[in-house]
Structure formats: structure tokens, C-alpha cells
Image (cartoon, rainbow, N blue to C red):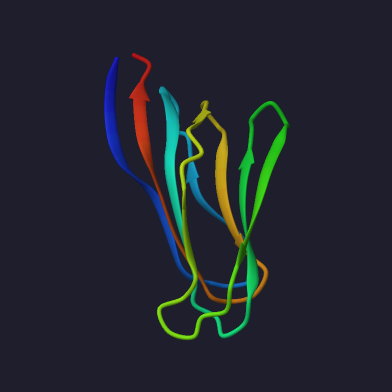
Length: 110
């Protein structure tokens, strides 16, 4: 088994709604180790971290973020979620102005 730590995906100044930033490719299993989110909007908002599992299950986490007077309210989460082939990771914003980066490890199943 080969393990590669990597940036899984990112969004910058994301608009309202959910944005797919990573889908587990064929032959891989992925561990989402960290998710960094920053509010760049002038108003407080809620970020959504969502995992759409190939089994049909949906797991969501809602993260409140304060308004951005300067550098913005940010949070670093360590979900350590294991995703299988076809599972999707999304990041959402309740208002335009979310930056986010997801990092983790891809494991080759071959």
C-alpha cells in the first residue's frame, strides 16, 4: 500500500452553496486529515463541510465564522474521516466569501 499526503482540494472566495473540492478516485482510499476555513466576507456566516458517501449517506458539519474585519475569522479542523472510492468532499458557504483547503492522505489499494 502506498500513502501520499497531499492537498486534496481548495476553494477561494467561494460563492453561496456547496462546492465539490475532492472526489475519491478509483483504486484509492482517502483520509481527510485537516480542513482550514476562513471567512473573507464582511458579515458572519456559516461554512458547511459535507461528505457525500457512495453508500448514499451524507455527513455534514456546520462551522460558524465571525465577520472579517481584517484577516478574517478562521478555523482549523482535524476530522480524520476515511473516504472510499466515489465519496465526495464538499465545502459550502452561506454567503459569498469562504476560503478553504483540505489536506490528507491518499492510499493506493493496489
